[in-house]
Length: 372
Image 1 (tube, one colour):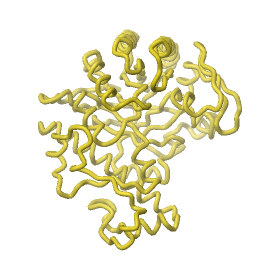
Image 2 (cartoon, one colour; image 1 turned 180 degrees about the vertical axis):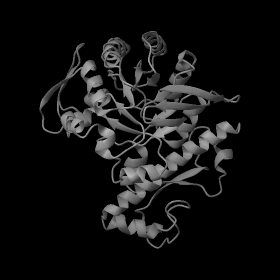
Image 3 (tube, one colour; image 1 turned 60 degrees about the horizontal axis):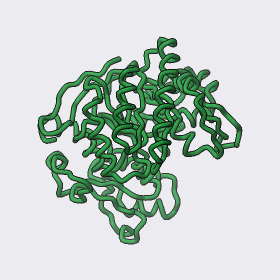
Image 4 (cartoon, one colour; image 1 turned 135 degrees about the vertical axis):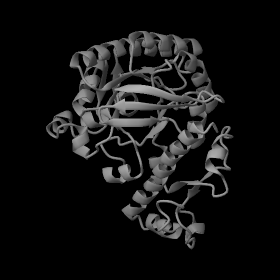
């Protein structure tokens, strides 16, 4: 298991690399489709593979509550349980505990919470989070973290940083004792406070991890603040380790973050938007690689988002896209949404994930050819 840097851009902080895990290699920068409970909503593992996904993300919190770790152990791990042969990254469950639990109490030991499913009380500790992810058979394990919302005052964010660093050390001890072949990533907190971000990052680098994630972003702060945080952190992120921006984002944000040195992304946007009939489509007049090199902020010239349920698509018999769904018309997909047919969700999700995965492929090509 390793990360190898292949190329660095001379025009920005963009990088190409190869991340090797026990279940395969992943080219960076990359995007992780989100299979929260062991599936990408409305798609099969075969669908995800055919779209060209190199790796997926599943969630500790959700799988811990349902179906339960004992079930997945009996299935000989999450890979076999969901019939996925490529790498899996699992989130620690920290963000979900703080955002979904009906009742929760944060202590230095962990988080006591009531399940959002049935109200049952649980204690999730940094040690248990790692043990759950080990039982899932994750290729990349995330440390348990305290994720403060935005806005939060500096004192609260400092407490979250201290708690996250302490939990990271405890979790690493469990991971190290297991002698697992998985990779362990630390999660950097610090909100929008420069001194806290840098201090926390340095502390985690001293602990030592296989990769570093920037957490506590895409939680309500202005996007310009997020870009500033990336700029503060990049000089202190080890060059020979993968860099992961959690929970981001819109296509232009992925391009901007790549230019700031980020290698890994996940986000619910393509799948969630698909379920509401919002489709991401390349602008036919835009040359993809050339356009990506000039993206600054939200540039609507290179892609568009359409609401397929709008009446204007009722008689639009043009293809949904020009690649993997050209055999289906926009009129047909609109009909499926209006008729509430499940196929609507599947086709829209295929479109949006294809867009995001193709975007990452285009970004890698643009870096390789010196365009970004």
